[in-house]
Image (tube, rainbow, N blue to C red; front, top):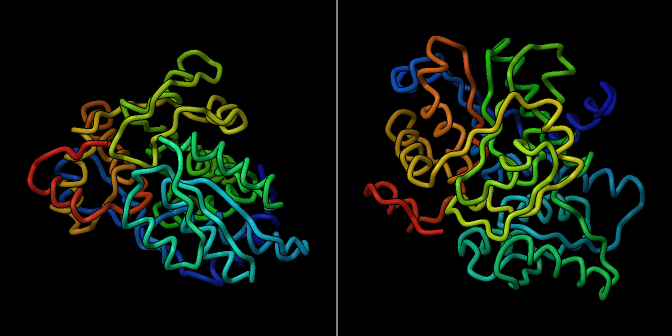
Length: 321
């Protein structure tokens, strides 16, 4: 999907703004999962999520091309933090559209980064449609949540992981719009590894799992999960084509399993994971008999969970979507 020279350019952009994130094989997780479990800590970026990498690459390349007009995008929060963070560095104004009832803390973070925030629509896909309309009305450039430059940025986390941990038997990656898993597949292929890339979706937002089973993109009527980073009901066709070709399988996890994985992260690693960030660990726990004794990684894609929801999880409950 990208060349070695393009990866080098993307890496320079990313590392001008942040250092590589750590990957650790936690002993208590090994006891829980039955296998050597490497956690890629993307909750340690300056915005608390992996999406920042893609935003940095896209916005700096946009600046280099002389595309300095305003931009707009739709989000549930992490993509919507990456764009204004990077836009500010590039001297470009940003507008973010999120659904009504979105995470208050993610909304506050996006405003703090300098974005104009518009709340509209009942879910991400409705907000995305509105963002495209606003782009036409205001003459803004719409930035989709999946694209080559975004993937080039986020794939740097997979290169860091594979170089530090060596060849792994498998890596579990959460799926929203698909940049994370597509970037992981691309890194695996570029490095010539045999690591199986396993996608993870939420039970209440399982469009990608249905698509993988059908062999063609399938949309759903709803996307209901407290793991808002995976709450997508319309599958991106380009991303799906690469997932279909490069992923080993898709695992579906319940919100209850995700909540238990959030608790497991806090108990074993003293680290905070949002729903989407905990989903890969939930999938590994679901498949622990199958994966016993192997070398596995889970992508902790973000830690931006609202405090009330985190408190619910720590009390043993599962937050509502």
